[in-house]
Length: 122
Length: 354
Image (tube, rainbow over the protein chains, first blue to last red):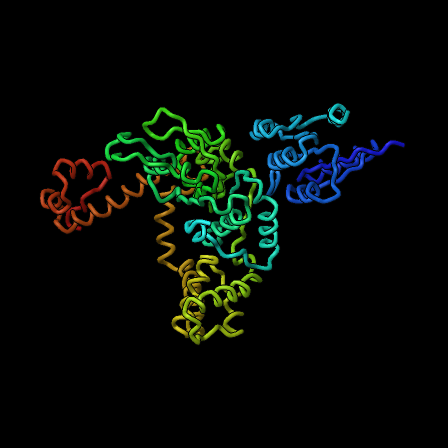
């Protein structure tokens, strides 16, 4: 069997975080989840971390999703990042400037997100 | 390291509360990033100390650390301080001057009280941040580029300021890439004993280690129970007073007395009166109430001025028995202006025989 892809998902909304985590776990991804930017960053900076894909909300307490994208892209330029954002939120352009691979607006369908993930993981 | 930077070495982040642990952790994790940061917290909690700690843990240590208070200067002056100007850019600009943005190149620019920055200047700051640090000094055609780490600090609730149209939402998101919140001291009393320890040691060495009375356990317990409206800065002042004056118990007594006084005043008649006139100015519940969209400081200010004018003019008219010519001389306004004000402010002469 092939090794599962490692995913890091960061979102401060418990419902969304649980929904995304359950969805991707069922699809056989190895999911790590974090409810705020600092916890997410700790996983990213951990010694044995090697995420294949990061999915992050943009507006987060303490360390924002924009910061997460900048830090990931600086440290691991090859790791793709998908930013998810609430409708009409400003930081969308900031996410693009920080070189997020995709910015996905809420609400979105889970298969839509998975399709994007698959595309980036190829 | 230059002298300038050395002098900016701030104290460490002191405290054992969850909030302080989180602040220290955030500093450790983000200091190397140089990403725009906003430090939130009430006056006196130590926002500048956090900014200094970020700087000290960053690769920018040893480079300039420049601070500017956005509330202390009028708009035009703040703009020229931030971005600099060319000789002859405006009356009085006799020498070319570099702006703080440029002076902070390769280092840190701390924008203190960012919530008090005017909207036009917020727009200019946003533009500079969007362009990656490019701007032109006043009166100059040339663009300057500064690689400056912007750390902003505020005691405002910027989200609320955005709702009320006093702060730009786009600037908020651009600055708020990293957010560090420092809780008020009353919400983390467990930090008070370590803070006392730290500052007593520091002040003792400043006083050449002279033998000085230190607060005993009872005093420390009482200090932990106090509400500290002025936060750590107030604690520092109280400790200094204790070390210099020696009488710790009396100083704590006074602290609690003033606290009770404020509490009493809140329910007292005088305070009520004050609140009543403030309520009138604010038009609480009325058209110009701050809860209403139509509220503006300008209208409130106009009302306040009118109220004071009405009282003073009525008082003088009463004293001169409504001799308007005499009254206008006392008030140092023209007779015509006085007549206008009397009718405009609706001041009516007392009824005859009253």
